[in-house]
Length: 138
Image (cartoon, rainbow, N blue to C red; front, top):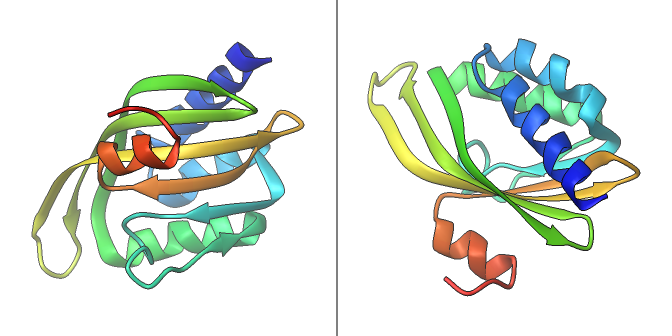
């Protein structure tokens, strides 16, 4: 099941990337639990906002489109952590809609799966913080 979880996460991030946020989320909903939770590191992260359920994922995508002209996550590595957890390490790039300021940063997501779907996604803007949260050495 572990390799299957990695493939589920890989497909989910492939769908998120390379599309506009709304289309990416709609395409990825088949891989997310209907009661799933997304804790984004970028959108709502400073406020501690959690996006819940498929409607929450849709709201996250709408919030991304409000704040960013472009936003793209590029996965570089997926780690099977066992216990139905997968860690994605990658980079995010984008451009602020109003400010025009570019964003280039490391990003990571700690994903928990239940019954073959992602039930929790926790985002990090630091690989070290993500590794620590996953209980892995840096």
